[in-house]
Image (cartoon, rainbow, N blue to C red; front, side, top):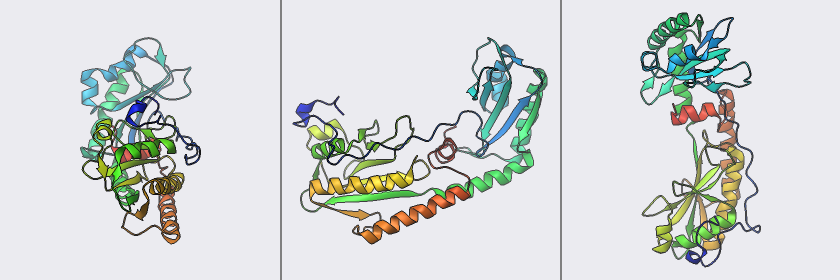
Length: 310
């Protein structure tokens, strides 16, 4: 926050230990390689290493296009984790795999499409003396994609807390100051976020309610005023939803105190101990559903499913 000119705010933008949030919990580690929970995977197996010059042909336009633009993964003998396959022709690989999402912006992967992809993968495997092993078998793909669709529909859960001023509108300049004091970071999207280091997703974001959904320095200079703010997060994308909810409550109290405001839930009810407990219990029930679905909020698999990253 110290990169912003203090003359815009009358003071440096900095964390205030009196109200600051604690350090965020560690990010969920990103998982490299095939994502078996949300992808159809074909491993190319064999007893001998594959020269990189041969393996990299997967990325050539003819094979890559015929295989429907898959994600391609490789491991050298010295690797302990999967790496993205590159066009490098140096050395060799012990392990190769290709993968496709069950669900994407183009729709569900079907068993028939998976069977065609496997046929092409078999042909490529034969060209490099490897056997193509599908995980799962193509007839199971329709069921897997449908199951993920049901999971996505049931678990696309959002949490929001609203703070509205009791009297005067919220001045953007003052919102920047209190968000900085809480230890929040200004994001490229114009929100103030509580984000673990290395995480692709924040624990929660603070956004304005009014004529725009994003904060900006232009808004500070123009003395923009808002009717309130929302503190919210998407449970599937959040690396630590339980901590995020408690952090959202804390941030809401600090912002409400600054603006003599009131706190509401996303149904417009004035926040109380009972509603806090209700929200906490509801979130815990949602997290139980994630556990039953074998998905971890904020994980590579969850973000791939709910954001359709690939």
